[in-house]
Image (tube, rainbow, N blue to C red; front, side):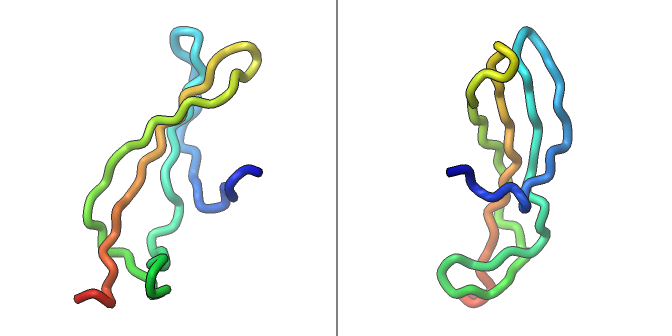
Length: 76
């Protein structure tokens, strides 16, 4: 089962060196804390995750996903 992709924004798709590359990031500015359920938009840090996926049209797929780590405002 695939995760829901409603919260992901695809920013660019291109082919380089025989690999299909996809750059994406989270779409939502505010998200709910998984522990307390309160919404927050205060960014703690950002990083990039790189994922490999099954071949598309015989070419491997590489996804770079921009991710934010957020502060929970209820823990202030």
